[in-house]
Length: 457
Ligand code: GH3
Ligand code: MG
Ligand code: MG
View 1 (spheres, protein in one colour):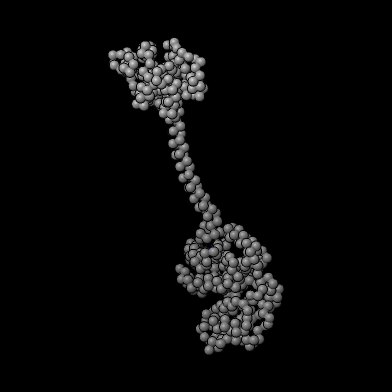
View 2 (view 1 turned 90 degrees about the vertical axis):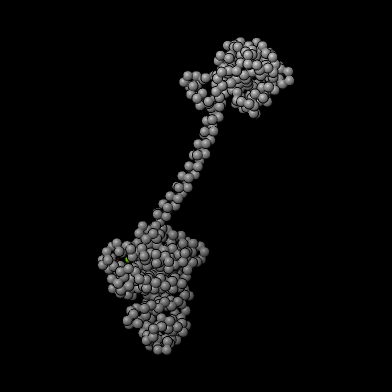
């Protein structure tokens, strides 16, 4: 009854249970109670009805079996539903068993393919088996016990393959999930590292760079300046009479002030300049690629900005204002290495303190240091009412020539308000090379210190 399919045909009798294979459940049963083989449909293909009948009679108790009379019919059925195993006779008109099985390799990779043959030496079967396209061959006539075992092994193999496949896809999914989480964790770690790095170089109170970072960075900047033959300047800043502020207002208010100071200093300089807390109420500013003269002018600006700033409670200070003193030095002018330049700025700062505070002092250059030690000269500069200035007791042209001095202290007596400008004009008129940094000593007396330093060294 080729091509047939009536329901009273024992060969065609549809198996009662056709639950699609549940891979997970199957695996559990493999481990615990054994596989429920009937959950895995088997397709038997043979052109001879007696063979199909014999197959069904032998195995339908244990397995779910469907039959096909030809390769073409089998392909149609395979396209319609999933089978675990296909058992095909080899010698069939139209499409041979090997050909049928080979045609299912791509479309049904997990399907277990078994060939039934009387020709064990058939080349094409051997080749198909060797290349893994056919799982097993069974020689005719087959014995029910052997074939039964073969079918069970085939189903187990199918169940395992399907299970592996699902494991692999589970793994792939979790791998993607893990990768995503890992990426996220890495991003967080990177952010935490950046925060940590920033924390390691910051001062806890002010948020400025800390002393350790300053030292490291300063050394690097000196090396760089040396390599590229550049000038690099440094300001060392100390808050004047800060102990008094602390003692009067209390330490917490002192902290508030230091924070406000840090903000002001940061705002006062360029982006490329580095502001750090040197310790206590001392700050440093590194000015890359800046000649000492420019640094002195900038220091004056910073000093003036601070003196004018309405810090909270500044009125408790002796002068009624919060002021700073600044020492300025530069590499290579004031030292051959990083430490020497810091020491030079520190010394200049001490001179600023000694000189009455709220002022800028510039370091004595390396080359002129010995000379300057013996020439701590003071001269009076008088500015008359129409803004003209002259050196007291000396005419402008009587200034020492050549200059050779790093610092010249000039006491300025003045009648007019524009004294700073006038003093500058006076010194320029006297053909002084260098930068002029006039500074008020005490408002009442209208006295000024004018720092003049030679920029030729
Ligand atoms: P000078 O003008 O000579 O610099 O006088 P000064 O009072 O500023 O100097 P001195 O070194 O005598 O005092 C510095 C004060 O700074 C003493 C210390 O209590 C205070 N200080 C240092 N670090 C901190 C800080 O982190 N917070 C507060 N509130 N005060 C600090
Ligand atoms: Mg101090
Ligand atoms: Mg101080």
